[in-house]
Image (cartoon, rainbow, N blue to C red; front, top):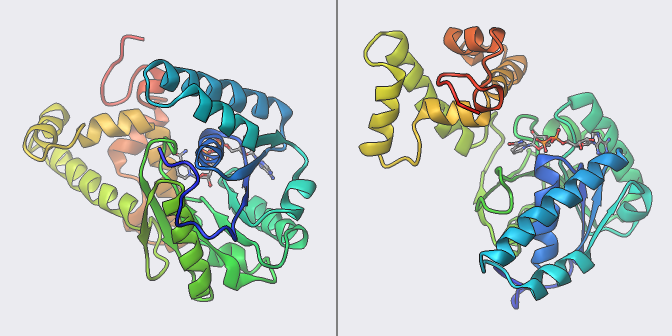
Length: 295
Ligand SMILES: NC(=O)c1ccc[n+]([C@@H]2O[C@H](COP(=O)([O-])OP(=O)(O)OC[C@H]3O[C@@H](n4cnc5c(N)ncnc54)[C@H](O)[C@@H]3O)[C@@H](O)[C@H]2O)c1
């Protein structure tokens, strides 16, 4: 695990992560582990408490298993500041990673406020999976310093970070964002232009779409399609198992969000996904999705 990277030019020293949910908490911990002074901000005090206790469990487990030293973890906690005081954190930040709720009006409002508060040089990035930054940049007076910086769940572990410009994002912003991803121990994937779903989720969607098509045509059962993906393609799990893990509700809502952006009926959720969603079969989290789970 990288500490402060030796090649790092320290013009980004302070990072602010907005939203202490599933993604924001782990992104902020990763930043602190990698040597950055990090503010993790949420509007809800109890969310910060939850983030702190779930991160503490993860860090304790990593220390127990010898994946990190206690000293590294202690130093990271010293650098991580959890707070609801957005204004003071953002006023001294060099780089914002917004990981708040996936809602365009909320993000637009948030970016307008961040733009008012942040120093002129600061880059404002969004971790959104579905909202491209051109839709948010217009709310700021610094569209050249706005882009998507898209992490994957769980952010402490997954190496991929997609760096996505809109047409007005400057080269310097992209370079700094990709360099920051590397300094966070990640492998940046640089997109040259915006496209809904970016790269990784589009690859995933293509496999999922083909798997659903084979299933809907009655070519094979979903269990056998999963077996083929695992045993022939060496995927760690099949597309149906993965849908259950991520959540059928998430798969459904992502397609609906894409449909809202594209207006293309091709973007709509597959009827089999809609059926599971409407039946409340959300996958592992609800005990039943494609598969049935014991607990
Ligand atoms: N969950 C994933 O697998 C995943 C993966 C990649 C990207 N994303 C993206 O990351 C973002 C966050 O997703 P998540 O799953 O962590 O969501 P989440 O619901 O777990 O967390 C969102 C957090 O944002 C907080 N919040 C809402 N409005 C806020 C505001 N104005 N200021 C500060 N905090 C605010 C909420 O209190 C909540 O704690 C979304 O844009 C999503 O598209 C999610």
